[in-house]
Length: 69
View (tube, rainbow, N blue to C red):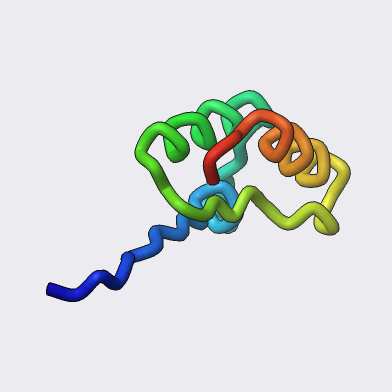
């Protein structure tokens, strides 16, 4: 049996807003990040902080809140 580990990387918070008309508040992004952490996702792509002040704030708050991703 192989001892390789599968690493789960989620892009919901970054790619989820790429669809026309789709947007999330900072609080919604934090709630999603908490659920991804609860699901034991290894890596969360929280957003693109250089894109806007809102993205910067969201990524900053997620990084301060989430412990295990």
